Length: 115
Image 1 (tube, rainbow, N blue to C red):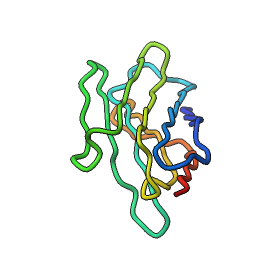
Image 2 (image 1 turned 90 degrees about the vertical axis):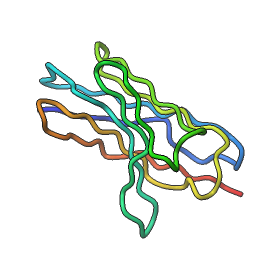
Image 3 (image 1 turned 180 degrees about the horizontal axis):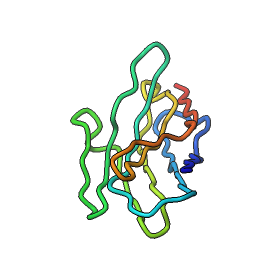
Image 4 (image 1 turned 90 degrees about the horizontal axis):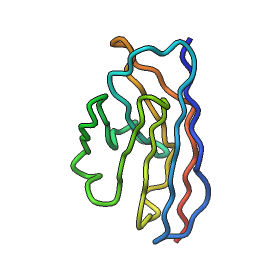
């Protein structure tokens, strides 16, 4: 059984920064990749960034610049640094891992940006 727990969300003023963290636990032997997604109210879940076990980062085009993903396979953690937040960043942020070809998701952490 694999579990993911996100933390670090909250209410922040526009222009501020947040660092989201995700810790994986359970029977994890080989993480292929880790990632962050978000889902705003009334919208579909969208990719922010992924990082492979080799440390290769990939960002969605619209997310380049303000978002930085980092991960530690040994510690089974993945983090997301978000700078210069704006109200359009308000969403539930989810972490994700690919383990033996299967995707696992956390419950999400709410990020709310006030103007």
